[in-house]
Image (cartoon, rainbow, N blue to C red; front, side, top):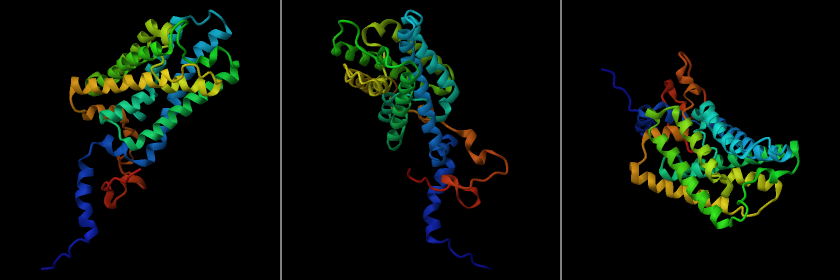
Length: 296
């Protein structure tokens, strides 16, 4: 009888990790595959660029062509844009588009902290690029669409309103993400509808930003720093309260919410193609067995 030599020590040590990787859902393996990270960051940059282009652009265009983009159109347009963005790229990056949303997902336990800096950098870059393009096209008019307190409204009141609005927005996002398997694509309607609704009643008070980078992009390009801090502190405070509320309402985070927050990119998995095998990244291993996860 031929005896089989024992597996090398390294292979025996890796066996439990490889078994754990086999048991992971496909979206987890895809998300942690570093080959796809650039796609997620580009998705956040592009999505935030389009959002700020519409949100700030509506104000700028109305300043250039007075009365052509009324207030109700200015507040509905960003909601419709977010709806479209979630539909066309939500599965890539989760379509955060907002640092308050990214931080809320991380505090909730649905999004890994090590990926937060990249997402925030991509979102800020998209916001600045949109504001820069608006200035190039139309000049420095309408404060480049910066969100400012309404006439006679003190900064503290704008901060409180922004906190309340963002609390509602993040609550809707966390709630629809937790029920992602049931709500599905209709989450885009809920989020886009909330943004439009918030703007319809609160835009005259604070501009209804609910997004620190949507406000900061025009400020960095245009240089109007009036009450900018209210649009940083307000949304972040509202997001923090929304996370606490989510724990009260739904308890610990669900796998469905993590999948919605992180994106899946399942169509980019080479193992999903018959006869194909991975050539690099975390899926590399002899015989196509998923390798242990590498840290980004």
